[in-house]
Length: 228
Image (cartoon, rainbow, N blue to C red):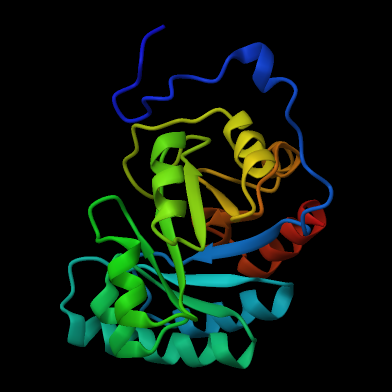
């Protein structure tokens, strides 16, 4: 067996993976929105329309190449909109920005810090997520470090960011069979391909371009129709 350097547990046996499907004792899958990189030009109104179109569990504020002061200025009005709709406001990458904004949580890439550090800075009630790509090993490490959820992907081709990890949906089934910590599926997900990930066991479906690349109200309604 060839051992993946990022996942020393090795690949799932295909025959074993076929046994997995959604554990219906888990709560229904929910929608997790990720912002586009550009949140100017009236994006606040688009966010209001999206959150008003259907149930959304969380919104991740993801901007790049701006300093923390500017990021905070851009994030504050969006955070208020999320609070008005009872949607968790999660900051991407930056523990410091999440602390500054008093965000509900932070989502960490593999190079963005340790969940233990985030917990010590943000407190016991913060929601801490960790990107785990296609690695069971990284996901278990994140869980042991206190992450509140783990994210796997990209499951489908995406233009939102450059990716090199493409897990099989069975990793969602494996995770939810073995652990109670929620898992998030991400990467090129649309209302058309989401049902396969929901069936496999995703607790949350994270989407960006599928919503912000067109009519956000229609997109959120379409996802609501397949996630329930």
